[in-house]
Image (cartoon, rainbow, N blue to C red; front, side, top):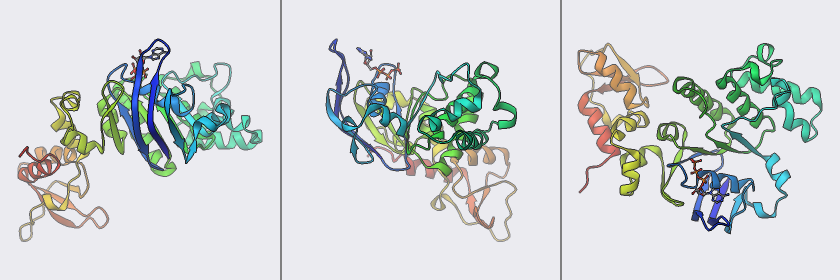
Length: 321
Ligand SMILES: Nc1ncnc2c1ncn2[C@@H]1O[C@H](COP(=O)(O)OP(=O)(O)OP(=O)(O)O)[C@@H](O)[C@H]1O
């Protein structure tokens, strides 16, 4: 895990980039740092692998104070993915991916076999792409190679700075979804910086919303969207937060009404599907009710109506007393 304890960074010109930051990323958790340009996200991240040194406070990675670690050795243990992927132009995709394992002494054949596996995992067929050079790839493919390369050394901790930033929104969403699937199997401890709230909400187990150099709110996406802690967070999250909240609020049993005797609704979603998904199905059905099924057995658990959606949103966003 990654733990910040009262960390402050002041640059030599007097700029305070972050002030008295304390938070923790649990093992296997993905935390997104989101906020406007210049609020200190990148500074925060770069202090973890010592590309930037804090002015005061300390940062622990898996219990070890990073200031006591050798920076080069530290960076080999912490994967780093950046927007400008930084692939070596004169190396093939396979060689790029195998770079770090080879650096740390993995035999070449083994490093390459692992690299091929990882390329497969990020959706690039090694037989097709392994021998290509970075300039022969699309932006999205380059970013996949960046992710594969960061995972190649099997680091327990991953830092990602706008990792899907350089591609168009459609490709970005696909990469995000694939990355989430990947994270379910690799379960890395991840700190991910983005200025895009949708990305932060979609990817984060928890989100840190930055104001100027401080964290204004640190919580699960549904909680941040449903109950912004400050006026600043509320305005950052924006007027369409209700819609965004639909995407991160699951359909729960409490939101359902009992099915009528012998009722078999035409449309249905599984219990735990997002409200956004449920609403999309609901809008397609004339009946104004859709079935909600058990994700394992497929059996009908109950019925969701527009009132149920409203109830679910209320649950996530209780009206002010
Ligand atoms: N080397 C430096 N010297 C002085 N000030 C700096 C330095 N690097 C960054 N800063 C300042 O520190 C603040 C935080 O910068 P940082 O790069 O961490 O922000 P950010 O949230 O990552 O922004 P962006 O989303 O634009 O990348 C900014 O005001 C920036 O101008």
